[in-house]
Length: 369
Ligand code: ZN
Image (tube, rainbow, N blue to C red; front, side):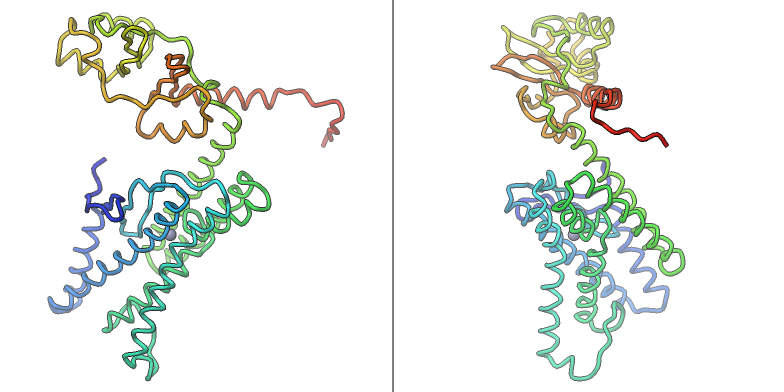
């Protein structure tokens, strides 16, 4: 989906801006002009929004660079009209590290607010009483207000806002991640309902924020549930170990026949016992169109997927599926299986069923209610 524009890199992290953000800028300029502002004023409104998003970038960098300190890289930072998102490769598993990563963003806003306040103070702005406001003539007062607002708003204990992560990590220290996430996610949904309800009366942006929080809380809970349910499992436990493979020189037409006859969508291509790559269904169709059905199989191999070691914890493998839908499993340099989201899902389904059908242990007290 090409809904974001790449702005370049900052500290080696891709900085992207959602297209809707540009609409926001146009909307701000137009609504300023419609309410009788001069072109100069409309332009300064636009500059204010851009400065605001500069602040959001610094906030996200707070998260990203703290995570980097714990060896976790950030895929990208995206600016949306309702804020920013830093996509970390993963969340730290240590609750204390998660706490620090979560709190680093709002801390940036607090520091910026402090610096702005010192600046305003030394220019004598606090000699007469001033009111903190996001509207008004002084852009520095507006930016100070914005930083304080971001600081407070993000500390609301609701996923996926920072306050929600702070809450989850604090609970995690007491009761483990699964239960902590469940509680924090429910609080997040409750907060989303309240914010959404308030938004109906006061500000439509809040409704958007509420949806953002609701979806975030749900997917966070799901992700942690997933991580928990594969705990202790290795890649080997969830792979498909019976599959067909073809030789690199086999013609594409026969690879297609094989794929249709067996229903196997992703076919490993071998040469002298070594994996050359995998032909996915789409690669196969492209290859047949481009090269014809007599072309050798190796010519149709798509991008080379990362191989997984059979003994890798399954939860680490889950992180790799965002780039590829099928991953080869290697043991002692040999291809021994394939792992796909479906094969993982089946294993988890089985795991779940086995848990339920286990008979009660002899000493267990079962109440009938
Ligand atoms: Zn944040």
